[in-house]
Image (cartoon, rainbow, N blue to C red; front, side, top):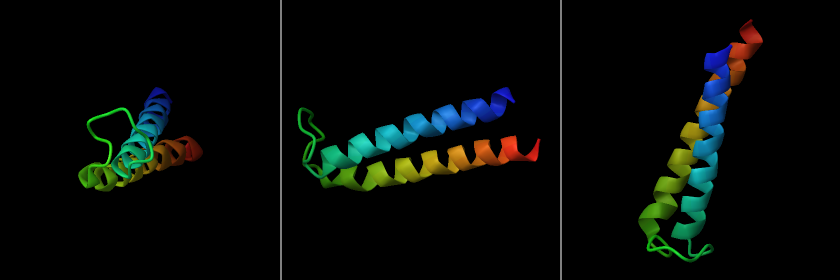
Length: 65
């Protein structure tokens, strides 16, 4: 059960980080050297999707038990 909770927590962090990086890359969230750099607008959603996969694996593991 601990493993599933860890996956969900790590996934949530990745989703949040991905959202911040996306907003910074799009220039909607300022205050960083990443602001307005298109690379972060691409990396952000990839990290966010990885986080959603971790969350899905964690929830799926809980449902099995």
